Image 1 (cartoon, rainbow, N blue to C red):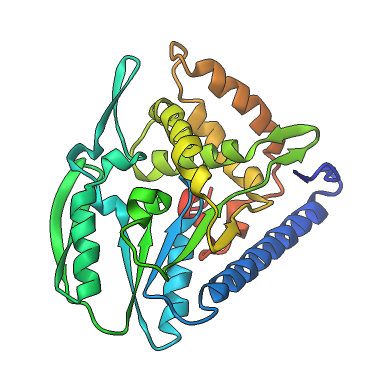
Image 2: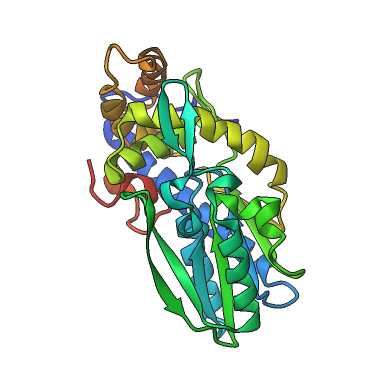
Length: 311
């Protein structure tokens, strides 16, 4: 568990605290980028694989990692081609009943059009032209296809939480390399603890509210099944060639600013109201003014969740 109990904000030390906060963010970003580079370099030990899988539970930082991986592949003179397994969802994303609601299933292997994915991978290996599906989350259906013609030097990245499922990995021949990414630290500050799964929930509640028009209540509604699927189908298969810890020491101090406003929108009559209030009570401890989103670099992995606009 990471601890920050040595922080002691005060009016007199406000400027010094802000300087220290900037330093912490700068060091966190440097450490994370170094870890990411070293991990990606390990993927290429012994040669460049034809297929690389990139997996991790929701809100782990896969998008940034995939972009960095593409840059690394391109630097070798090869061409990186990324496929999101999300685009292979069935129409509706699969529907799952949850108490008194229905929710799209974007987590289990049943949500994937596994037959289409199998044919797709087979054609890639054979060098045949494929039709890459495009999935619309807004419409919860496959919205179209884009034709792709394989080239001999192309390297394929299959990215998604489902890239660890045996039903998916069994489609790849021996020799593919795997990366698993996930924030892997709890944090304690002034005796208040946020668990690593709660940090991911905060990333998701902010991201979904800002970019997917999802209410915090709806994110809570989905979260139970998300966590259940992770424990049953993701973490048991998380042992990969490369593991990356995407936790950033400073993030609770900044995401608290966004999350407090969003969680306050949970209605008083909601069955999630007590959970939201309890989480908010702990988040207020991390809501320190000397940290600001303006301090976060525009190319930070953390921008996946808070976006480019600053508070």
